[in-house]
Image (cartoon, rainbow, N blue to C red; front, side, top):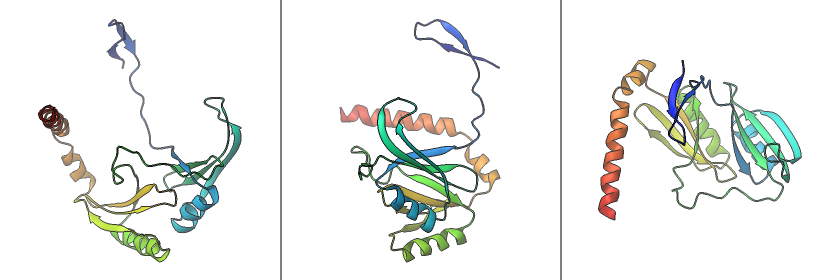
Length: 188
């Protein structure tokens, strides 16, 4: 089924409906050093190195930039991927965003597995925050060698509870938007 959307000129155009997005293929980030990143993701976290690309030309832009692109596969088939641009520069944190906001969250099957990973990470000298109780899941937080904040989570709530949690979700978002607008107006 198609939906109608306004074009930039205000005319109506018939657009195709969105297609199903089936999951994450990969999430890519910059890394300082491909081998250091491999040791962490493969040897510490247990994600196998799945794919390797070496190129001097960026396919999407055509620009010259020698790089290595490495992919680590999770059990659902999705990957975390990294670009080593050959300059030993780590990704910089966002200057206008608190360090706890931008992160990659990955799922484990149980709280017991979460606690085991916490013990494993700490055994490798990695500082771990948590286990944190988020009511519907529990998490631990830590940083990779590139300064990227990672989260491992174990779901607590069953699917029935998660469907129940969705009730009124758009109204909650609308209420937040109104509250935010009022707060911003008071600050002006």
